[in-house]
Length: 500
Ligand code: BGC
Picture 1 (cartoon, rainbow, N blue to C red):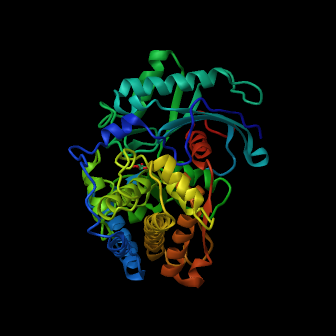
Picture 2: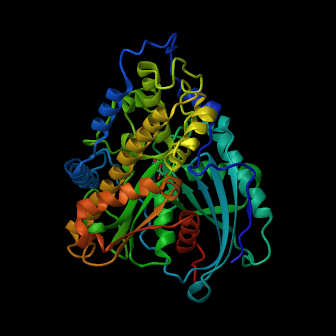
Picture 3: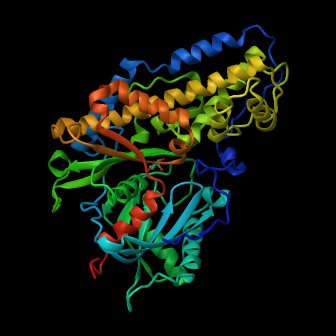
């Protein structure tokens, strides 16, 4: 398998970079801190309250898992029946390994987009070759017009397609087909079309919501004279599930824990009452839960509420704002700011950086937690370089505790969400989930790069399911599965068939 990578932009491990424009959109209006209050309130009570508000003991986890399952049912019963949209993917058949030919994938889901091509060789040869390129999206395009964004994407795709050669070949007179991974809430209207419901993850592009995103891409390709065809439009969770299923038949659920978060799973057609007339040869389909919008019974703090109120989508994506990579760093920054103001955590000055929303990112929080030195030197230099403050050891210890508290809550709640999905599936088909090996395919930088978060997630799953059942549940990281998965779904839904 050959892999070519060219990366004109820098991708951070959580798919997000510090962006002045992004910060601008999430600005903190009217709050200028004139002077630091005297040290009336100490830091300790703030930390104690934070830990109490973020606590996720077993009863809280149980409530979240149960509420996730019942919100899923409500969302499957009627359109708009719950916070969870439970979107039909129209993906009824998953890759089998027989897929053959050249397929493209286009992946838009964060501050980067990725283009990929794969030459598939069927059961014997599987993936013969893949190549991909990753391009950062200029921050201004995240706040520009729909045409500007799709023109930029189409031109990246065109440049990439021009370089095709070597092991990649397309039969004569065939149009290149694309699996388009579009990782925002989309109301699918067929396997290759869908209407954007709303932007998430800090995007605020005008003119796309309410439109078919495949039509937007097609129009941009036409403007460029690029002859390619989208044969599958998929959410990144669905691409991940398809990509993982290509190698392992036991994959039933896929979860993304990166900049944003979401989960999808294999559902029985007869368990979807809101589905009036949809025929599936296999009696099953994939449901995109859009669980980022879940909000039932979450342990939230004043910092979460303030961050939500100041965001571009207040009241929305509450689960995402509590557990995903875009937000963990910002929650920590808000806690540290309060500790600095009210408890003089960093002496008597408050840095500009600490006052700047989103200046502390989740990878920073993660790096802080990896410091095992006696004096917490790494923490000290992060605080100096990123937060712009000098710190004593006692302050650094508190900072580590704050990071741990926020990561622990996020990881454990994500684990409870996964259990909710598995329990819903098990309830409907007794023994088919817990009675055998069942794989949850996982992708996203937060899960991949944050060991403590991963551990907390797994601990919550163990606590909720107990040791016997947990043995059958495999949570497996499938890196970059969504790109290949989308290309595989383009093959499965190819207008030329895929067994030529
Ligand atoms: C989007 C989902 C996506 C998830 C992970 C969320 O913000 O709403 O569609 O799957 O991020 O990328």
